Image (tube, rainbow, N blue to C red):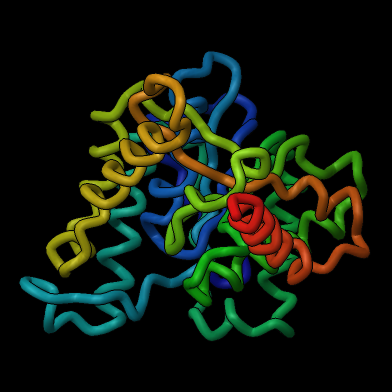
Length: 272
């Protein structure tokens, strides 16, 4: 397929097996932060692979140190190369770099991105899709999540994924009721998880310690997941299940998101 203004990158050591796991995210490095479950499963599977869609052009990130004088255009090129390096390390099937601005992503009337998502999903036919949580506080992340939900909802049921998840990045999901969150065991290769994040030197040296923060969060999730049992896993990544949004197309995304807050309020209230 041909992208509107982006590029499709095929890693040199790519896995050519069927794409079962697809992540659609906002920025370069978001996929490695939120979809490590799919990355690890694709990496180790003999039958299936993982693919990544990055929607943003990479401009506008925080920068300091050696990157403090970099323009947006320079940062775009750096972040694209970093993302390509991560795709090589993770043996991704394919990498879709869509190259949209944050304003385009946040524009609720922009259907170009939605339609591009639809075409990619139709082409790859993944069984599992990971995207941003609708509880995320980053507006660009939310813009992607809303467009991915719209895209998946528009597909015939036979073309929709079997599993559809919203994952944590700029708001952890540890506060979500245990019965409403999914805990992925992502302990299998912590060294690989670190390698995938460490390629983003423009972010780490630019003042954002994403490797320490992300690996630390996963350790934290594993320990604080269950209070009355020993730790079952070393690392856990949390997500919420979007299946109810597919089963009930009349359910507004806003009401769906607020239902998690309502459940938390109910649980807290029961303690008094």
